[in-house]
Image: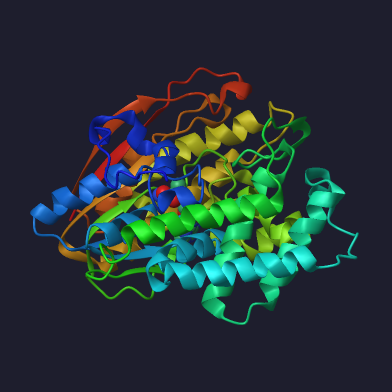
Length: 426
Ligand SMILES: C[S@@+](CC[C@H](N)C(=O)[O-])C[C@H]1O[C@@H](n2cnc3c(N)ncnc32)[C@H](O)[C@@H]1O
């Protein structure tokens, strides 16, 4: 049996690895779902311990994602609240937080019963969305469909959520095409390692049971971690002045589409019909950090006259018109100018929202990266810092962790970009 070191020391606090999810695949609970947009659980654990020693006890993550901060909080005895507005990402975090609610044997019995029923199911469905048939050969699809139908038959809500989670987490590993855990699916590429859906289901369950057995009784009871399906721009369920720590990573203004990142999964579960449905059902609740989500906006000069953007008005106006001008020189005609205006408008709302729910001695850490659409640099850390100050926070500083300029390479520019931690105090 695999021996888990519960808190391995990677020396992550000072390392660039703290901004990536990579090492989480070795950590209990975190490893249940590979969420590439996530950051390091070990680093979050170190932060929580440090801030606990300073007398802090309640942490908030307004962009909770797969629940890295929430899981670590349970393991470190800190009360936590997380906000996540993507329904699928929310479900993933919610399932991970249930680890302590189950008896391992009971969970094993329930999940294996679903598998047993799936293996006996006769599947007659042959019509699927095009992306699904491109990603899964007919035999694989029959097995996945059988698992899906069996999952829907589970009456107990908690068990059904866990079974949903297991099936969702194995989908990509059961596909022979390029389905890296990232936004774009590449049906023309093939993968070296492909898992049989039933075998993948069983081994994911085994991994989860191992973690539950290992952690049961040792963690969890002394703290509560809750995930809320809300919008960080308008946090309503967290009491005023509740949090004295914020650890988070918002979407970067780099055109990555968080709605699209789960298109395969949402199509598989028949929750969307196509791209427009995805934008209407999911995109509207997300920070507008990609051009797809601002395509309906005719123009966004209106945002610039908003009081919310007053602290950065001159700078953002200058970049806005540069981007608008640049747009006319490019074939794709991307609305980066609109995206940048909407992004900072949204993030200003987040800081006002956070101001309400954080205590007077709250300290915050935002893992952020800057961007350069069409080669025009947007100083994200500085602008976010200024917007936070205008919302009532006191001071900010940026700690650079690494250089990054790969994202925009295909746009043929060499503007140096960086990623790091934006520290903000009340
Ligand atoms: C960089 S990821 C956070 C990953 C997280 N730190 C983890 O380790 O899993 C940003 C998350 O913000 C979510 N998000 C985007 N807009 C949001 C909004 N308005 N309110 C709440 N969450 C939002 C996205 O769905 C995404 O999961």
